[in-house]
Image (cartoon, rainbow, N blue to C red):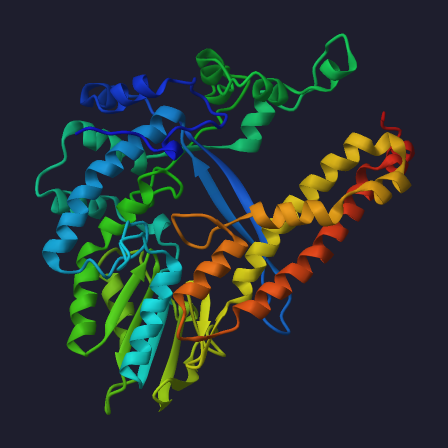
Length: 490
């Protein structure tokens, strides 16, 4: 098949392999003979940390998420085979009549023929709740989903979708995904001396690290093949190997271009069974990756936790390690009080106390809000951007003194620029600035009582406070007085 890589398929980050032209890359990844013999590099892993938005009266919790990224050719191979498998997957969903069930990581069109996003998916769920009036709604999360996918079942479901056995080159790609290897980014940088400063003749060269030189020269290969074998893989016996292999018979890494599709294909039988179960009861079900929502009309004699019981039992049949824990379940009840209004009551679980929480939104039967946790995600990104600008400004002009820095920093101007450009992504294949996200949500939820405007005002007022704190922090750490105190050259 003809394949044209998307901009995001051409990787520009530092990795173990060298740059390659787009034409050579396409010729390589679409050649089954080359793919069959291709040696995949280890994925590079790092950890993203952030503080979860605390529930009232509870302490803040730090959440850690491992992120992994593949080498240039490896990522392109995964992206190409994602395109190949995706075509068969979409056809199989249509054949089974379940295209509306798995909604994550797919191009799903709305009535305007534009791509749907999590805003649209949340509205679809809330619309159906409004339509049926009295409803019991169950939201669950499959625990550690990607980490527990059974390798034998992955192969079985892919072949089920393809309607044929895997070809040898396809097996090679699948093996690279299931028997993956990883290295920790910090350990790699340390082993390769990426942060060691230079020994040049002038001050700039002496302060420049190896990683800075690579970026400045636009070279993206961290080391030579020989250095990779000797320093990373343990070829030099004085240096233990940094490579960690997944020897288990389950689990795939999140972050590769094909991982999300494989995770979707894996549950195709489950999705069909869930769809039939919900429709038989006059309800609907949607699965967004590992998040599932089931909406059922209230029926006398039907237990409020019928969907919970069904889901917890059904998921076990699709992998010994897959489970839905009670702590990952929330059940709420909607009762119609007028044609356009319902009353919400939480009846099980810790989440969705004041309204149904789904894909970043909260619906209480009357109004729709953006979840506080979703806002905290935007604030977290804003903190990074404001401190990044502040640090850069302070280090550039600190020789002029801390008072000059505070008097001449164009904080209002820079904050407006940052707010307009800081990205915000919420379980979606697209990215917006936060204000664009709000505008999109406003348009989508027309006809609902929304409080997005007041939340936007809160975001803007909080942004100024965040900016001032970030600037003060940068001056305290990197300003003139800090440099004199720590004997750092200006």
